[in-house]
Length: 326
Ligand code: NAP
Image 1 (cartoon, rainbow, N blue to C red):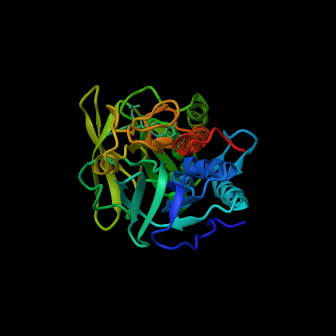
Image 2 (image 1 turned 90 degrees about the vertical axis):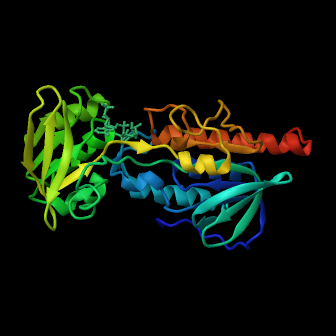
Image 3 (image 1 turned 135 degrees about the vertical axis):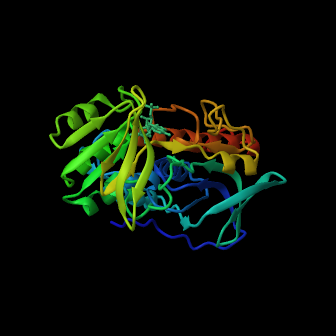
């Protein structure tokens, strides 16, 4: 099984029933359902698996017990391949409405047309915006514990955040690093209690709570982190070799604004319970939407992808005057 999906052999300008924008779990699931509804579909995305590429073992997707994320991505590819859904590895720059169809513009492969769109573009990582962060990115500053943990064998590291990513990251890092500092701005965690318990049991993890990062220091590589305790105002520098910033994700506000899609008060794409956006025939699914904010799971993204594909099918039927499958 391959980590890469079947690459589309399609011509620029070709028209589809639906174009699915994105390549994470929501997009794969939308593609699967679009395939089962026999919609002529195209998936356009950058990284097969999306944020899932940054996960290690997945044990919260029903039926796939303790599966590696990379294996899961291969299964997703295999599943949409069964329905011959083509995938184009490209970046969608934007789309415009022309008559009753949408013209989707990509960075490299030209334009494609569709009567419906399913947007499943996920989110992008939030930054700390402190001195040293940009300077040392790739030189000790990382945004993916799962990907980079093995590089810090026998080193001292810090993880910033109090959600599932940070706690899962601290747990993985504790297997490689000699010492892990978990820096969190509060003393309560957003993460699932399961992760908190797991990390608390680790002898080499020290919790630095009610604290924020003020600066990341180093010369060629990261050497330390300046942390301020918000309760006492005390500042101290902790010597480290690496720092993992796991403080969540930002909404796709720019993509939405450029393409005229309404967002909610947090900047996520606004959808109703059927995945409908404010634009006719445009649906959205997964982390880029405001639905279930704070509870982002592979299984919830997959559910939303399925709903969006169902809605695209229903929309096309209504538009074409069909009442269903004949
Ligand atoms: P998250 O749940 O949004 O948590 C972000 C954490 O970073 C919070 O603890 C937050 O602090 C902290 N934070 C945010 N901005 C900060 C800043 N500027 N400075 C310092 N700290 C800051 O993000 P996440 O942990 O990346 O998870 C994202 C989504 O993916 C969640 O829905 C999560 O459930 C999901 N996920 C699930 C799994 C799993 O189920 N196995 C694994 C990973 C991620 P406060 O708590 O004070 O706000």
